[in-house]
Every structure is written in C-alpha cells, then in structure tokens.
Length: 171
Image (cartoon, rainbow, N blue to C red; front, side, top):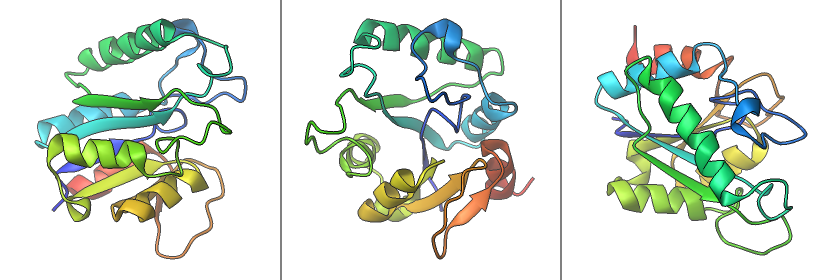
C-alpha cells in the first residue's frame, strides 16, 4: 500500500520551462495537478516534493525566491483543500557532485527517512528519465507522467498527475 507519494515539481505539478521557473509569476500549475494532490491528502496519503533547483547554483534565482515560488504553490493548493507535507530540493548544479541532485538518490532517501516510510510504501512521480532512475535507485515505485518520452521497461506511465491519482485511488 502506498503511504507516500513523492512528486517532482516542474513538469508534474507545474508547467516546466527550459528557461527555468525563476519567480512566482512564472509558476503555473498543470491543469488538474492541484486537485490531484488534494485527493491524495483526502485519502490520507502523505505528499512530498523532491525537486532539482540548479537555477540557484546557476545564479538565476535565490533560495528566498524559491521559497516564494513554493509559497505560491502551497497557497494555490489551499484553494483546493490540499497541501504538501514536505518539500525537499537540491540547490546544486550538475557538476557540483552532490548526492542529492536527481538521478542520485539523496532527495528521495531524505523523504523516506523523514516520513519513516519503506521504499515499497512510496512512489516517485516524475517526468524525466533522471526521475525514474532516482526512484529505481532507492526502490520506490517509479511513475512517469507528462508527454516526454520515457522509455523503460515496467514503468507506469500516465498523461498527467491527475490521471495517475485517479488510477491510484481507483475513482
């Protein structure tokens, strides 16, 4: 039974941007994603976000700006009665060699430890191959959403977070 759903942020909850989501004004939810998170909350499933935010290391925005982006996300969720239980992020760049930047397992390990959940009691929902690789590396169920081509055997794939939650909750 799934007790924890860990979500990538960009491309899963909100519209992704090749130029990075650098401000609250650039953060726009994907249709149905906020309602899907609220449904998970209503079902008693913990919800975490695990997101790479290399824009901080690249100097595109600050950690304070990231907090403001997340405040906007959380405020938007409240309109649907939803919430995020915890947010984990990696502020490092691709060449920093940290253990938290996906596809490395650090963020997901933090989430599992924080919630005292076993890997087989969690899933990680992402929109990129690095998300799938991170999920597999810690033993959580990898779930692909969105329209990017993720080619991998035995991966559940859905058009959106909303579609996945509908399947998970069976409603």
